[in-house]
Image (cartoon, rainbow, N blue to C red; front, top):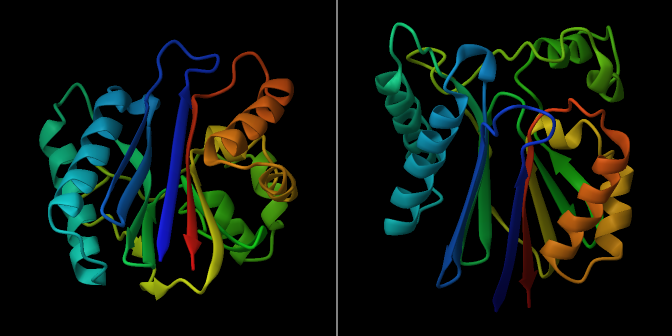
Length: 242
């Protein structure tokens, strides 16, 4: 038996507008969660993130599948719709990360530096790698993974919805979730920049619901981030497999 619990949050931070979008849909053992971060430097970020989140979530719930090519097709469609929404004066873009759950199995995909973290029995077992200049610096040994948060190229995103005809979305293979407790955190860079991975585990251990978990992490962020901090958004999904 599979039991799902979900929660989400989105905050404007110290910016004039909240350009993040979060969408979580759940029905009959299926769930899709998307967290998208509009790139404000290009204008219209809130439009791009909303378009991407809607295009991914609604078709999946209409016909749930964890087929990798079908998921890749959803990302491609979201990219196409963002490109269509662009104008010469408004080259809107968005990063995005999505989790898909069906019948006790899951897969996920992402573009840019919005992240997914997967915890099993409270321990972090996997996370996505950013499509960014700073992540490349990690891969070439110039900096460590922890250094990304303060790297000079932190905001240089290499892939995004609206960034070109082929966004090269990274799609993880579907996996059957083992019996036990699985927790997924999807979040924008404005969130993970100020909440460290060991703290995610600590707060998860003390939280009975996804909402409790998000609240605890958001409190950490609020006490640490500067007044002009970025929009910060997240979605949490608890999956109990019996």
